[in-house]
Image 1 (tube, one colour):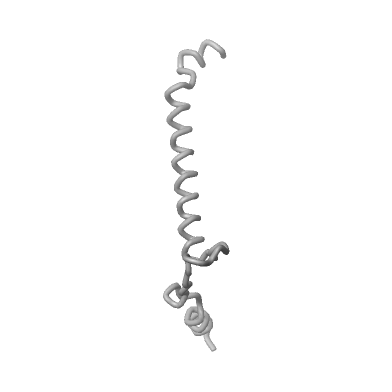
Image 2 (cartoon, helix red, strand yellow):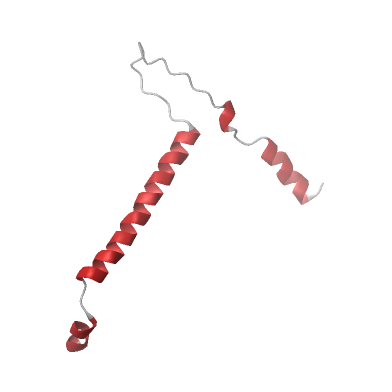
Length: 76
């Protein structure tokens, strides 16, 4: 058995989101709904993009409100 054959066999049995069907009966059901792996992945992507936006805004704020080059030269 080659190494590539091993990985091909593993890929066949991986998670498939099309098979993940969750039926929600919202009329009479008061329980919390279960998150699917697809929903969790979307949440992860949203959180990751928010963190990146926050990093960029912090860099912008540091450029806008940080000390200028002349101020830094006076301190040294």
